[in-house]
Amino acid sequence: MKFNKYESKPIVRMAHQVTAEDVVVSVGEATSTINGITFKHYEPVLVGDWIVKLTVEDTYHCSDAVFRERNIVE
Image 1 (cartoon, rainbow, N blue to C red):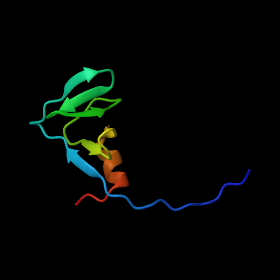
Image 2 (cartoon, rainbow, N blue to C red):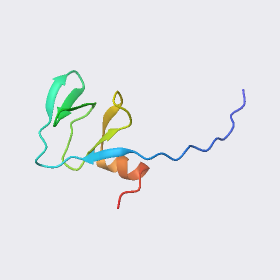
Image 3 (cartoon, rainbow, N blue to C red):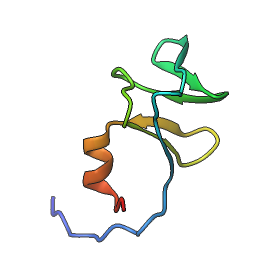
């Protein structure tokens, strides 16, 4: 087996940074909502973290540290 290098395609992500005013409501196992937007998460959602929307079906929680590591945040 041989591994080859492939560059990733650049991608623009739609994201919302969680604020103190946001109310996280649990709606199932590893699933919550903020302002009617449903997303997956596998750790607690903290103020400053991000809710990332790739598609209608793929919206998820990302910690602030990981989001900043993988994206350009001004």
